[in-house]
Length: 473
Image (cartoon, rainbow, N blue to C red; front, side):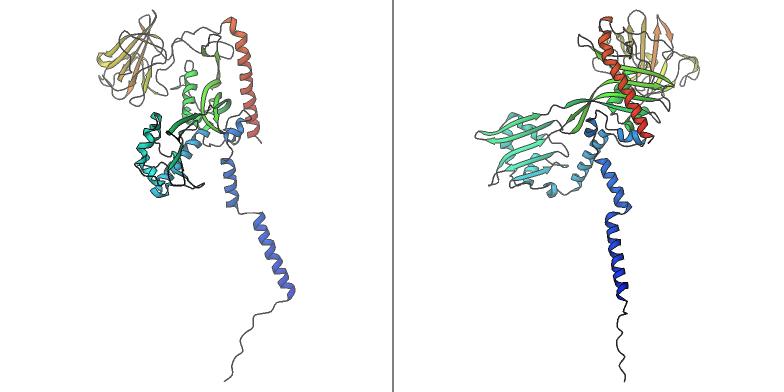
């Protein structure tokens, strides 16, 4: 029986082996120098996420410059802050209770994050302190009870002595406030540190391609600033019916920064809104007596005796008509006002300063407020769900003051406001009525006003031009 010899591995020329090794080395180098597209995409995203609003603030610009330059819808800096906090809270809630102890930076240092169902006692237990010691800590200082007012996602830092006793308790309540309890010879002492933010101006530009609130949010304006902008231009623009796709706005506003982070906003300093091809301007000015108001760029008052619409962002469901068919009575009956449909509970504002002639029930109008404005004008607000606190017959109200809330009382098929406007006792269409103006800038202050107004208008022009130039690159 012949034994078949085992097969030896094939032999290759030495030159081939050298070439193969060289190719393998080149491929490895290429992978190091040119990472995959997935890796590169992650790097790009990370780069954008790390581009903080504060770095752009150093150039006195708004944190939404990235979006403006690319015309892509990105989250506002405020949304990024809120989303981050929410994500952290969700992560903390998903973790089991023992995992709440995040890390031990140094001997005796413990950190815990407040999750759902936590109390100060449970947090003490998580770091190894007896829950009974909570009473001792809180009783040591009257203000120490603020540590028991826990918020989801709040972080508490404990410093323990070598024998495991509490020496220091520290927590960041907000971006601007931290509280501390430190143990001394006579017990624990409470202290609070409040950081004063740096106020800088920021610029934002937006174009309406959906609703005002959505477009403003995409541009980087917070909800409160959007409402402020609507109030500034509310005398000239009816945000319930006048807004059109392609309308645009520019805003310079105060931005508050603390510890390298945007923590809030202040007043609108200047703004420009183009509606249906017509441009309106506004500049905030504080006179020598300390009173602030908004004026056009050339010094005319933005304020009129009446605001255009008493409900923000409502939909007009029925217009002024002398021959409308009543939806309930089913017969032709004059509709001597304008109906604004909005969710139940939406605030209703007084159109102007005046005296309340009625705050009560009035037939088919249901809960109604009637306001007399001087000798000439009178306004009526019907179908209210209820009245705002302090609004009563015989009292006085200021322009823009909330007087009640959208409801469906009286002869009404759904939640809405019925709004009437009278001039010398005659009903007129509030949408077509020319509103009287307030006084312009006083002559003695006009030079001072223009010294503030002109640079703000010039900056908006410059910022917009820079943004448009960047988007064309």
